[in-house]
Length: 232
Image 1 (spheres, rainbow, N blue to C red):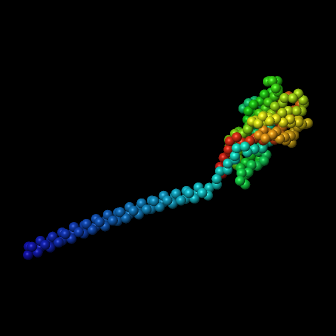
Image 2 (image 1 turned 120 degrees about the horizontal axis):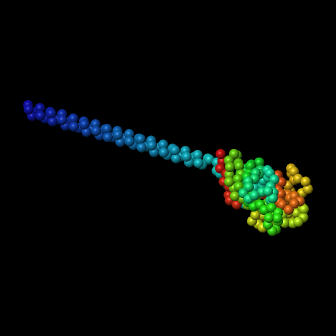
Image 3 (image 1 turned 135 degrees about the vertical axis):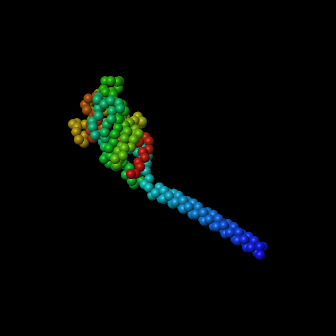
């Protein structure tokens, strides 16, 4: 009788241990399953974000690159004279012709441009006559300011005649005699080709020895560094 009771107790204890082991195993399995599920969800979310970022990058508008040597045609908003201008003096201008790259307008007509006087020498201050050299420094496109580096066309008055002057390109060293004009005012500027690389066109001069560029004089500058225009 005693042995039967002992065997029964032993069986009960064995069963209890077995049930406890099964419970722990089930808990561990469930925990591992939950961990795997969380890891999978986290990895899926990261992958989804990467795909979304790649799609946005692919469909985002690419910046427009305006290459070196692209001419920028402008008209002066003010009169400039070698007699009164000083090196570093700022001037304002307006883009006269739109610039298109691959069928897209990079710089629209009417865009505001800013430049500086690179050099100015009044008549009588140095041997050889008067000099006025300009360069563009900035163009505003769709409300955004873009710094530019351009050629610096130079105009000089060397002759003694009342209506003659020489326009010399910044890097080309090629000059062209440009006839002066009678009168002045709106639309008075004379367009003139001053040679390949000269980077200047359109100049007017008074009967004095100083170089004078009236308002609305047409000038052409060339980019010396690429201009990157990012879309809004």
